[in-house]
Every structure is written in C-alpha cells, then in structure tokens.
Length: 297
Image 1 (cartoon, rainbow, N blue to C red):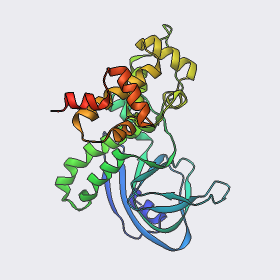
Image 2: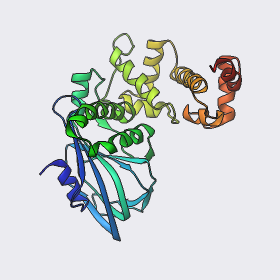
Image 3: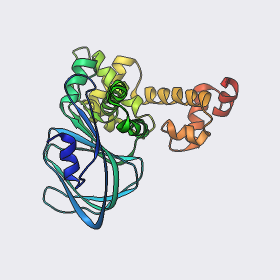
C-alpha cells in the first residue's frame, strides 16, 4: 500500500489527493490532502510506527487530543487555521479528533535528513523538534503553492514540485532540526559546518524569542561550549550577533515593506515596540521611522 493510502486509511479517509515528491535523490516526500468530518467526536486516529516525521498544516481550525503511549487521552487542543503540528512517528502516534479536519499532511522519511547532508551539503541533522499549534508562514505559503498542483497535468507538476519539496525539507532542517552532539575543535572554534548550522538556525528563527537553550538544543552543543565557541569563532557574543541580525532584518523590512513599526518589531523578534525602537536607535543612530523615510525609494 502506498504511503498516501496508509495515511488516508489511518484518518478514515476513503479517497485523498496526494503528491509524491523526490526533492533530492531516492527519499520520497508524500503530501496528502485530508478532509474528514468526525461527527460523533472522539474519533481515534492511529498512525503505526514509521521511520518518518509527520507535519500537518491545518487549512481550517481543528480540535484534537493526543493519546499517549499509556493510552491516556490528553486535554483537547485547538489548532488554528494555518498552524502546524510536527511529530516523529518513530513510536507511532495517536490522536482523538473532534469535528472537522482539513489538513495537508506531509510524510517526511528520516532518509531525507541524510540526503540533505550528502546531496545538498547541509549540516547534519538527525532529529526534529516536536511542535504543536505553531504558526509557520513559510510552510503555510508552501502549502498554498502546492494546493493547485493536485489538479495539474503530470508533466507540468513534475517540473515544479521537486523545487518546493526541497525548499520544504531545507526549511524544516533549518528551523526545527536538531544536530547530534557536537564538540569544539582543539582551537576552541567551530568548524565551518557547525558555524553554518548555528547561524542558519538563528536567522531562520529571528521572529521567535529564542535563547541560548534553544540554540544549544538545535546545534548539539552545551550552552557553555556554544557561548565560548561562538565568541572565539566570530569575535561576537551570541546576543550581539543575534541583535545585529535582527537590526539588519528590520532595515530590510523598513526599506522594502509598508508594514507598521509594530509589525516590523514582531517580525524581527522584539516582543515590545518600545524595545525595538530603543535597540534600533542605539544601533543605527536614528529611529526606525527616520531610517524608513531616508531609505525608501
């Protein structure tokens, strides 16, 4: 049975549209559009153990509960439209759904992680962080790009989907990837691949309130080695580099978009507009509004 058919059957869907993508070499990314109404509530979906991850992009608001390995049903969680859920299927997964479900389900075999390193030269990733109900604009946009492709002729679709599939896998690795345990070289510095992994993770997560613990978990370094290695390699502390990256992104947003100062602050990881204005003014020498007026064309 094809992966798409197994996923559809697990959700009680008799017929589901599916895309099968080979972004790099042999590993297949399967995307399934699942639509089902669980009228009586508490309808259980059981996914068998699999060497893969599952990402669900919610196309409508949904409600479901996780079911633990001990069969205990967790409280209902609301998954807003455009949010995602990312889980490992290594031990299987089970949920209890209440009401209507309309999602794009992405089946991502573990083998994609090895191919991303071998074929695309990306830093090694061996796991993803679990997340539930997180808004991810990039995955939302990719889902919107994929939806029309279910109905496209094969020859047209097959030229487009591999590029989206590769971008999807790379985005998962950059934003949610977890590196195996890492250590500094004898010089106390990062290797070029370690530095690339850390900086890519930070840049991909600039809009979030990330700290040393988050970067440590993603990069495979202890907090102590992460801090000392980053400063030894770059000449800056992580907090200095993080702030400089946020200010650089803010400059780009102010120059190229019409978003409000509050929206720019949020997109660049500043929880308060006042904090953003204070940091921007201290770093650049002028307020965000002044920067925008001088640099808009």
